[in-house]
Length: 380
Image: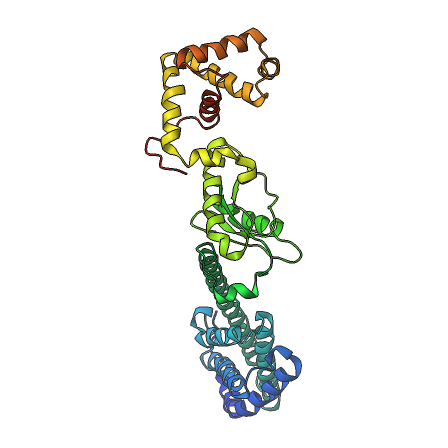
């Protein structure tokens, strides 16, 4: 934005420039009187900022040009100083507008006194309010960038604190957030959609808190992880949760949470999954050698009848889910009871399993629930 410098403006600029120290003092007094958030700003710092504002307005009047927001480094400096002092951005803008209003008022008074043509007066006023708009834009842009940077630093700090707690360390800042007498459990949850990471984090943290103990959950490396004071009520994604205990028990709780999450993924379960929910499966999944043995014994033989293997395993699962009741399994599968008997019998024929033998029963349940381990499995 620009306007040609009017030749008559020179008559006003000299006395206006001479009045800048007085205007700066009046501006500071009005800002202190109207804006409580400036109480902590020293008079020296405020005077320096006000002089920068007034000088910017004077430069625009001299050049007949409104500066681009990117050129207003003084505004950026003010934004940084006030941000560090905790002054809200809207108060910074109000402070600048007090500056521009006072120099505007003095400019108009001088223009009238010196008989400045109306065209030149209007042009000068437009220049000053153009400066106000450019300043406001730069202040808001800079302040927003500072807020984003501060938020990112806070996110990284929180993530580092949580990682330390889960590793068995207790950073000093944790004591101001956590209740040392409360029981906490570690949690882990995959983030299905990066865009929803903050929403999931907030839900886990809110539902994992109690009136006396706040949960702390962060987003880190594609997961939500943290510690909760009660089981979170999130049921649309798998959430691994470890046992509740003291803060120094969190490393063990986190190991269980990681194993529980891996197993919940495998079993296609959602919601909080811990020892009470997964039971023996957690122990089974941590022994890949035994798991592989059962898979070779009870799954590999089924490969001889690939078209029939899925039906046999589905029937075996239904039978276990029905408490080993053939009629209930048949009802769940919508087949005749003899079909269930035949498939279970065929499982025994192909694998040599005796489903009345406790050892074979455990092995069959193991592979029916967990399937085959990954080729290089060494525990979840």
